[in-house]
Image (cartoon, rainbow, N blue to C red; front, side, top):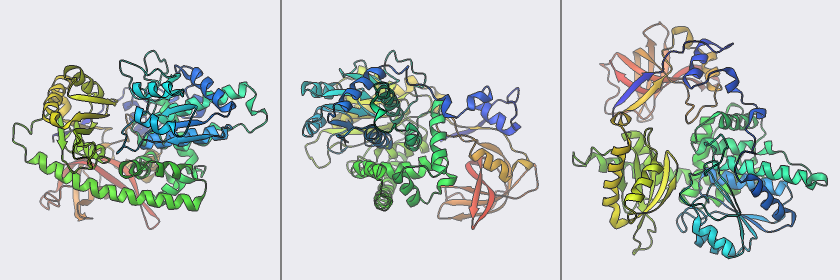
Length: 575
């Protein structure tokens, strides 16, 4: 895989009242003035421009006031779990006496409000179904619910298809004619806004004159977790949601379940940053939906008993450890498969991989890992029903790179080869799909062909964007701490990365394949610790190499109560 370090253009000015390094970083991320960095709740977008939200609030309010049975149908990932938890908590706080949830088991029913899930839901006898983080493509499922006399409110954020479900209300910033500015809202954020509208409508009707008025700020920790874990772009509105959620967690005002997950992950709440949610909490929550049943994750988030929540968090931690072992083996198989492809097949622009024994719940992570290593759009497939020898379907999980909108690519394939691609859905960087096993080769060829049409050759080279070169005085704890909390950082608003040349003073492998370095910047005489994770241990340590060019993040390493500057190496080149 070819990697190129490219520096952002040097800004022509400086943001008022801000250090030069930080000003440049923000301007590299298209911040034009300090006002755009406002992360106070007062700057949050109001809900009114979300199409269908008044209608949705009206339907839910009538069901709540008349004490109808409400059923929330969620998704089996972290965004879905937090969405269900937020809506369950908010509805109960607003006075709903009969509210439950149902999450399709991915191994039995697949994604979304399907007719099969409606049959399961009917046994619970709901008068109203509310979907969270799904539903925009559930044409048949909504029709089945309506035919059974059940009202349906769809709340979702995924891209809409050519046809919308005939629900009683649809709230989705990505549906046609919705003027809500933040198209990057995750499913939990949409659920949050619907609950805000419901709270206001109930307040206007005098509902809270005899009961406490709930605070929607109580759910910001769930919103921060969902927004980071679902890897949606951190536009201005999402940065507010994440920053406010992080502040509450740091101040100790988070849900018992998230507190328990932090404990098993070994993370200190007072020092939490966005990446901790993405790399430590999100995977443990996702493990339930990947290997077992997401109800385990939801119950942890809903739990109010610290001891019970900790037990649940430990179970999720064990599931995540199992997931890592399964993923590691699948990744080894996938890379061996790709390494042994004939030369003409190894030049694929779009990669499809499949093994009969791969775990359906882990193929999304596998696709992401292979995408990172090969810098190509990747779709990993697994048998849809591995216990059914007669099953003819494969489920696929797609991950893309900058330069290819993966759902648009699947849409092109579906229009050209309608018999090959059974169903699909998703967004720019990730998608899910179903094909017949016998069509795998035809689909793989079609995917590669469409990738070649929609992408440029330049997109196949990984580019690491650098915020420039730090000078000797910049390698200090104050700047490292400032950058750590200057975000929040995440998708489309990345953590600062710098680059420069360094002399190697010392190097050694630790933990198998992590390279521990002592470096000296060529522009100064100070010594700085650095670490490169998951290095190719066949190449390092190379004692003959004395000077390197690296892309790195300025970080703080804490060991035995002592804090020191440490460089996290993102890319390393010999000079």
